[in-house]
Length: 103
Image (tube, rainbow, N blue to C red; front, side, top):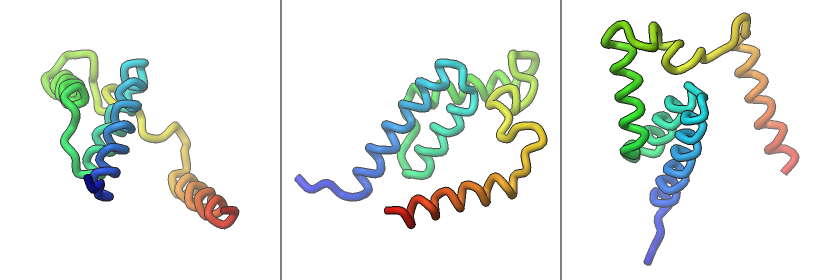
């Protein structure tokens, strides 16, 4: 049996998606979007549990007076107040560059 790189990527993405769903169940709103992102990035379908949660949150947000008044309420704010996004991106880039040089 031959295992392709795509199979490995799909398996890893599925595991990451499950981890994100556990975090979502514990109250991390942004974890649901991270799970969807991982599946999309790997080109795999959403697991049923993830798809069901995503559909529920989207429906509650779109269809009116539910628990979510905005996308930020539904999925959490992507950045904290007064966050300088450009500086945050540069910090991440340097962090990975430093790790690669030390290997």
